[in-house]
Length: 510
Image (cartoon, rainbow, N blue to C red; front, top):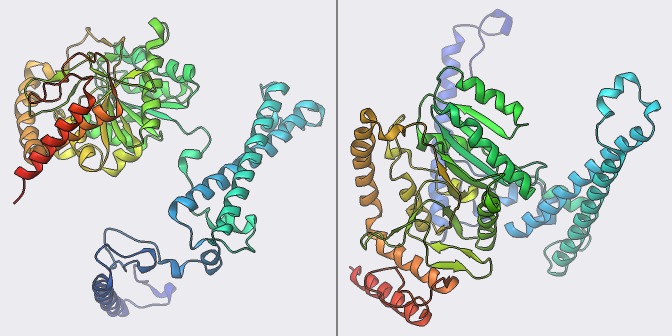
């Protein structure tokens, strides 16, 4: 706070230093008191940590903040919903949010229908507001859809509150209109109208001939699958005409392309920056030297890989990453890098899939919530403007170590750009990337994760045996050199994986 000065503020210059000193002493006293209370609270907490009602007091100026303990919330809301679990509150909140949104849109469409039927009632000043190219039939269909959603969510809220009352978690006298506002303090951004399901992230650098080929297939995929999507493109170069071309695409693509302009930060920082802007539930990191299949390609291969990706993410909620370039089952065991040819498939979805220790760029898909939870790509692996070798493998290991799974799925119909040489393979940049940066990142990666190599490999192997089926059961499974068993021998493979895990754990005992 700046002290007032000058006669018109009712203060004096001489008094300002004294006031500043008093304010500093006051802040210091508050900080010491807060630290003492935090230490006391920490001592009183059980070993597993404090509950919501025992929230620690955070010292003034600390980097993190905590909401007030539940005893200091609105008493009215504490009485109504204070006993709900986070999951129960989230379910009720989602229904309430969708109910209100559908109700508001339904009423708005009703007015649009009225003026569409009675254009003479439109004043000239109101024409811009209510005049629409949509037909009467289209407006009615949208209104009816919103009414259906409204009634569905109203029924869902009623059912949930009835069940919560039966469990004694909500007072018997509680009404829907009272409970709803008390859970509405945290909205689900994923439920906002038009929120993308998929956000494609692109790192772009000096490939003007590729611009159309980079965004049009993706827009075609979204249209074919009837999903909301966006392409967040980090434009890392300022060659003549390139920034303007990408900026114009924002309008030409009807908002599908979202350009971000950077000063050659390169891929790690580019993907993190784009991910911070992306709004999709799932993120797909792309490279600018690859042409992905889209409209006009055989069997609509572009549609297939995104459709399969979404199905896998939704069936296996623990999957944090799906790679589409190449993968390795076990880094400890020789050259087992695979691309395209894979030994497993997901039986229910009927698509090729494998759990793996690591997957490569690109494309590389991540669950947005998982990507945020683990901290994104590690910017410590390289400097700004330098390539990001090892960042995909490092992310794979961080996902495993954080409780997420890493998988691979095939992508057919991808093509490479042959008109321009890759920037990381030019003579003037090759050594900087494949020598200096790779050496630095590789050393850091190995030191951080090598103790977990075998443990991750064992876990991925067990998941493949337990959850997937062999494409060619007679073949030897490729997990490790020590496991020369056919993929059809699920029991034998499972026993071998468990035996290896047991041996590994025994060897790591202090």
